[in-house]
Image 1 (cartoon, rainbow, N blue to C red):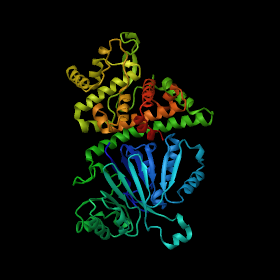
Image 2 (image 1 turned 90 degrees about the vertical axis):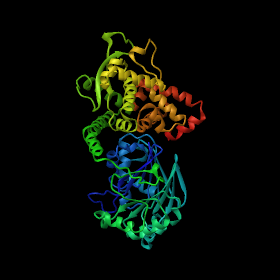
Image 3 (image 1 turned 45 degrees about the horizontal axis):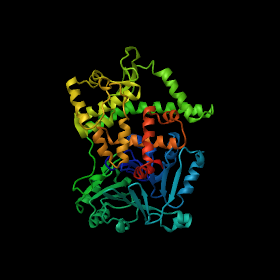
Length: 528
């Protein structure tokens, strides 16, 4: 997955119809971070297909509400979603006490959270490391007014940040009194995110021109310029020759493209945007409603009947098996039901099994098609369909595959030969020959990741999206954490919602991890 900045909120103290308050998502080395947490981040993450549980760390510039208003809801949201990974928060002096009071006022006790909070009080010019991302905080003059110091003392502190990722350097101004406060920090800066709530465009344009910054994103835009961004553009056009971008909510910047002499803004086509919005309406909203209903059911079992989570989850799964599967004629968008040969008794016509197979994985498949065209997408679907059938105790035939994909057998044979040439085992009914299938390709994906392969490289080999690679790594980490707590395999299956076969494959791979120190070092950050 390319490193990316997503503008969640580009507004300032007063939100407008077109701009929410300050918040930015940073995707770096397939990990997710937030810069500030203005409202309504909790909803905006879903809008951009981001899971709140994937946020590794929050970096807070200061405690004005337009930068932190959604923090309490984000913490609660992660708790309700049963987050298990620790959440790290970096912020000014007083952050720990404010968060503790926020939780207490929301009737959330820290020891009852489903996850650990790791709060760090930052110091000026100190660097904090998160995987391959480094954040250096520097103090700004935004809260240095005497009246703030009189009333709030040392807690009145505001910061900007220098964010270093693999191959790029970004400076986030936070809130400033003068652009020149940034002078010591913008050397070799690829991208500057500069606020426009407290400045004139001319003074910012003069500063970035003198500093020779190649990419500038003007954000945190005050009411004066909310409806007239062209005023900012005009001021810069007279002075600045670099890549100027006026932030809009939802804008995406490709951080991995800095230094190549062209704009780093990701341009979304209107057709693609409309298509994605349609999918979100028809599929994602429905799935979110189902997830909320399931969570309400689990809460009743746990709170009213005092049942542990894993047992509540098993009851929910059993209820779905009994009440939903036999009667429901529809499945999620992109999926189909099929009756296929049984993996245990493939020749027995009376022992066929019903499986749910994913023909179209939505945005993930769109990503594969964009990178690999139709043939690459089709081959990725073949691997997925074969694996999904096996996970549910079935085995597909060539005719099954051709019918599911809507292709003729000659095209299928070409695809199968191509996949075998790439080194992929093909578990088809016609090729089983009494031998049980080997390890899941999802396990092989995790193994490649442990061995140091980049998610993009792995995704290309398996004709999957980088998001899918990241999901398998996350599931592997969940399984290992539960196994360390001596959780039984059947309970791991219930908690992670992945098949027993894959859980067993992951546990076997973990045994190999214990013999390889470099793999252990690679995995350990994922287990934090």
